[in-house]
Image (cartoon, rainbow, N blue to C red; front, side, top):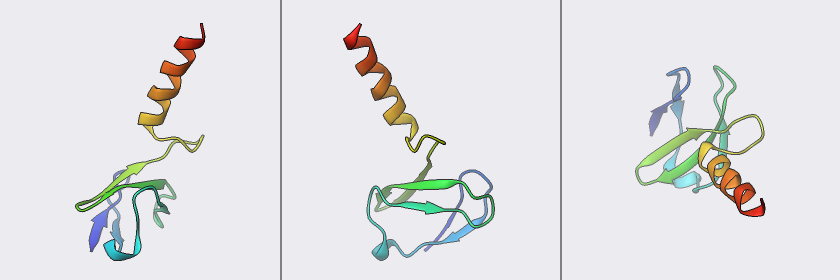
Length: 68
């Protein structure tokens, strides 16, 4: 199924039967790393430079608050 990169709108040809939630892909056009959030429907989310998506960063910040 054709999907577009959320960063550069480049068409991505991804077979939903060959990916699982949590898999990472790279956009051939802009090089951004994308995480498969859901497969039905197919939803992609950019992964930041540390390898965590935005939800993980929020969770990590909450854990830091508990240690204080």
